[in-house]
Amino acid sequence: MRAAVLNTSNHLKETLMLPTTKTPPRNALSDLTVLVYGPTKIGKTTWCSHAEGALFLATEAGLNNLETFQAPISTWEQLLAACGEIAGGNHPFKTIVIDTIDNAYRMCADYVCAKHKVEHESDLAYGKGYALITNEFYRVLNKLALLPYGLFLISHAQEREFETRTGKVMRVVPTLPDKARKVVLGMADMVLFCDLDISPGADGKQVARRVMRTKPSASYEAGDRTGRLPETIDLDYRRFLDAFAGATVARPAPQSAAPAPAPTAAPASSAPVAASPTPVSAPATTASPPAAARQRPAAAK
Image (tube, rainbow, N blue to C red; front, side, top):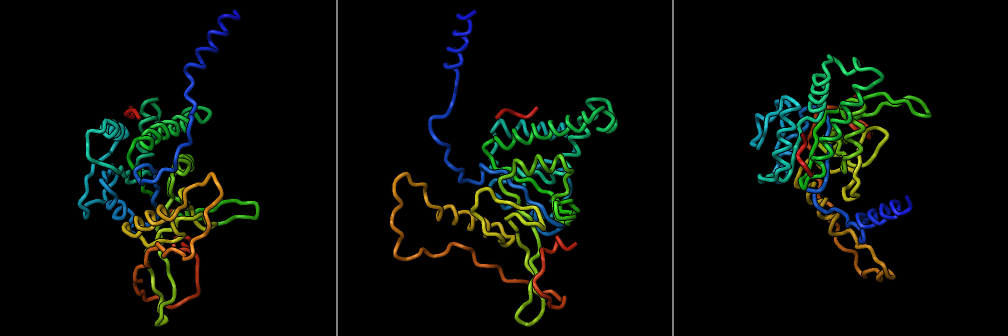
């Protein structure tokens, strides 16, 4: 018995694959998972269409006015087949866009229910149906996220009431069901909320510009694990790239020795220039919360 234990211990020592060096931060969008959500027709799909080598897995109509590479997806089986081809690598695409991830989740639920011969996930006892759907949804998304391509997920926005320690609050979140939203938010490196920024203009009229909000707020869901983006940025893909790349260049490398003396002159700012605002006809008001808050490596088989 003791010999068997020793042999097992020696075998474990031989098969351990613990790292010997630290993993560097990922500096490319092709390594990241990005959730883009906001009101209908604000420009989410157009924004994603400018991503490098974008391939749309289109689960709904909405690309008719855009020239894109797209694979129409109407069932979870079709999504699995597309993921299999993507994982094979025999293609030129660099960014995978699922538009929308809400529809993809519904297809996943239909697939699991059909597989277990039930009409609704609640027909399986003790929450088993919900668990099976969530596990399948996570399994496929996680495999896509681990592939060497950027993964962009598009969702719509909704205002929901949440209970907190101090009372009920209204918050704008993606329209995904709770369990699916937790899966997506957990794996997303960036959560970008598309919104209208409304402020008084020089002539007293209100002006509005389409923006992305990137930092957490009590009024909406957003976040940026990379820490490279400003809190608010114009809803323009080129400006997004400039901000992302500029912050990457400006970020200092970690130092193991004493820090170097500060430079005598501060470097020029890399923040992008704000886009010209568009006048709107509503009367001027004082600053207000976001517009939407006042009213969102093997093939997967």
